Amino acid sequence: MTNADEQHWDIEIAPHGNLFDLKLRDIWRYRDLLFLLVRRDFVSFYKQTILGPLWFFILPLFTTVIYTFVFGTLAGISTDGLPQPLFYMAGITAWNYFADCLTKTSTVFTANAALFGKVYFPRLIVPMSIVVSNLVRFCVQMLLFFIVMGAYMAKGVTLHMNAGLILFPFLLLLMAMLGLGLGMIISALTTKYRDLSFLITFGIQLMMYLTTVIYPLSTVKAKFPKYEWLVEYNPMTSIIEAFRYGFLGRGTFTVASLGISAIITVLILLLGIIIFNRVERNFVDTV
Image (tube, rainbow, N blue to C red):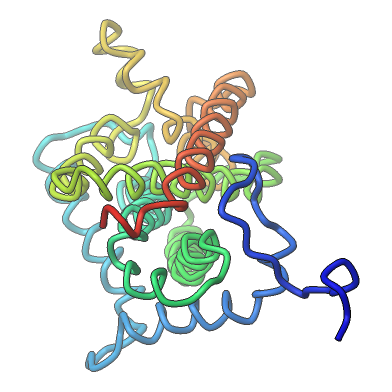
């Protein structure tokens, strides 16, 4: 029998560690579990549904129609000269990915308490799997967005796509990081304060109205300059404005505003990682 000093362990589980430790080596070792969790999320969400993945198309399409009628036709809110369905669908597509990541990540601890208490694996894999599985939905909704763009271009509508398109992967990364960071913070807090779980839906809806999903930033600057800062310093505002600018050629986009959003997003993600790693150590005793 070998001595303890000569023994080699493939996995070592330690109760304490650096709060910034992402355990990337463990995550890579458990990458098969990540793919299984993504598949589970995808299958379980649409299991026993008649239309299945078609809901990826139906939900944003219905939302676009409603927004066009309520905010475009009845309220008469400006869309920066863009066709109303295209304007709203651009905002909805970007916002849905962020909101889905935030909503589902915010229940990681409470929804997986039984699993976390029975077996070891890097806990960060679960919120990461949510971000990846939502990416599949986002890609499908982007396909719908491209179809609508193509339909308008076939009608003769000129869309000024530009070099801002090269920022698309960066914008997608920012949306994922922001949703992941905020979701981990809320998930950690709900282990002790369950009341927060009732405020998530309301909070996300309120945040949407402070983001340029249903109105352009130019309208806020022109009509409500006093409250401009509430919208402009929302990290998602610059992301959505840059998204519209790249694909549709309209949007109040500056490199400085996107840079500020990126800084805020990174800070939120780092804070989320710190809180997540801290709560992970003893959350089973409080859930």
